Image (cartoon, rainbow, N blue to C red; front, side):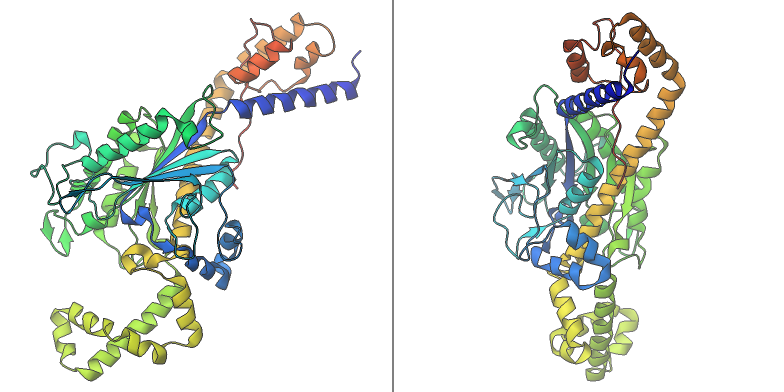
Length: 465
């Protein structure tokens, strides 16, 4: 008769051994982030201080583990960032590569002026979800459109073979594939936790691009364009990049342009998120509306300043009121020139300081705000988490229906064939464990399985936290 305490202790040891081996056997997850200047990122590190100036940012500030004004690298996460490798103003630019522990600057010198994009908080919150090492590959080039420059191979020909700077149509799509394949050829070069035997898994793709297309050569007038072609190109891009990276079900997140916040609404945003609603992409493509992460306090201060400068511009030139009825941009232009002069009178000292600390770039670069880029990166991670959770739920449901009786039978057959308290422990263990290849090998080595007992066991997954 088995000693219950002894059984529990041995079972715990076996499960611990199984978990350790399972973790060692996991393929290294790799995430790909691509796009134009807002994927490059234009938030200076110094703007992280804004997070700690109001309650809506303090938790993120803590999650960044800020020390002496500088954020910490994300544990177990490494990154590599590629840019250039193209033509600019008729001249060839060599490939630029930054690699290292995932933090602003990708392992380079970290200063208050170092810039970053959504990748930093994507790494923080994706790691909270996965609780395992992973690698981020970022490829981004500012001022590039999907219509021509990122144009995927299956989209069909474009009327111009090259843009004015000498880059061929679709070159930046090809550069993404080339740079990613360079890393996949030797992931261990970029992440010390890579295990060659376990391999890697392309775990997801984030696309954050669109400003040049929003202003691009699509049918219609300046303020009433038909962006349906962008939707077609985006869907084609997803199909092609999955094919070319040999990842047919790779989770894909589209970052929908959100410059200025939720309002004013723009038809281009609908075109960007449209592919996520296609039946073929159900459950594996998501769209994230980034306008909802605009900094509300900065928006309030900016609107207050804008109204003050407009009022001053009209006071100095009353004729602008009539002109603005047909050409509102002329009033905005006149008001913009007065910002520096009007700011001290229009804003309190606290508001001026908040605006100074919280911004480091223009509105089209999300104000160069750590608050905005930080919340966008977090939202991208949460979108990937939802896709993975949905997949697990679907997979577990299928296994419960089709595999439960099979697994139970296999465990019972093994327990009947084995003798002795240790080898009989399988009948005491849960029947729904699914062992990976390396764990199976470990259990075979220690006599807990026979070669004929390839009982599948699946380890538990961390919950979204």
